[in-house]
Picture (cartoon, rainbow, N blue to C red):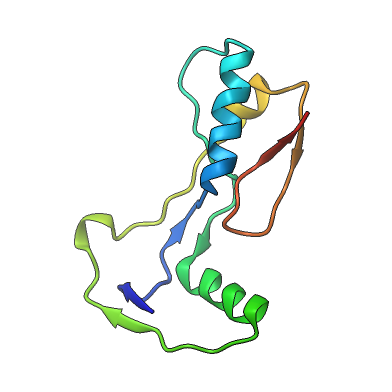
Length: 104
């Protein structure tokens, strides 16, 4: 596995199908405005790789390439507006690196 940098930067990863469900949910409710579509929990790439190792029961080498200087900062997002726009829905927290899923 090749990654840029040390893998410790924090990101809020969203599972693509969950993103689609969230957009569909907001569109159906005609929610207007700008929303941070995120889980509200940031994790490092190293943690995700460790979770993959554990889930699959395998080990693999991680090769660290030079960091991308333009994105060398942690990313955390406020999901208060998203939560407020979906007040009638139940948020289910998934494993790290997966998005908030609506249970309709």
